[in-house]
Image (cartoon, rainbow, N blue to C red; front, side, top):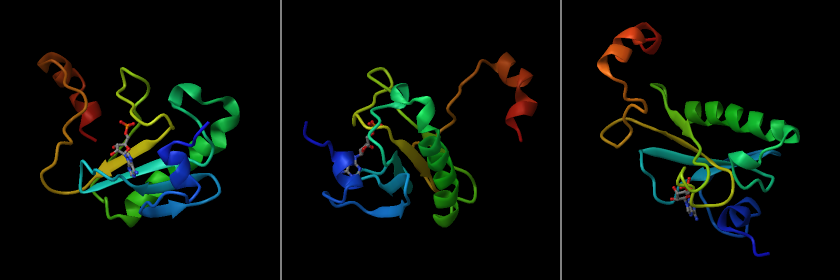
Length: 131
Ligand code: AMP
């Protein structure tokens, strides 16, 4: 079976702007960035989506989280960021290789609040949201 684009990037067979790599993960800039900083973090093991992770993949998952924090700091995302994975058809996943979008940056870009709640719920959870 032919490798997909992220497998080729992981294996150095396709060019990418790699910002971080260790034994477990590879992180590179998204070719069509939606935000000033838009980086994709993938495990170095072929896992198709979040739905396909197994208990034994914990080391890959923890490295994804830890590298996201490290990269965010290195990229100057001091005011926060978002880490997103799209899973499956209804999650609008396009590339069938588990990846996390690390997105953020200052200025005008389409990164709004993720959760839009009715006003009453907003009031109820106000303290929780305003950390
Ligand atoms: P998703 O919809 O979560 O599967 O997102 C796939 C992402 O991969 C999109 O944001 C694309 O812009 C990005 N992408 C596709 N091909 C490449 C590539 N060759 N290098 C970097 N990013 C890519």
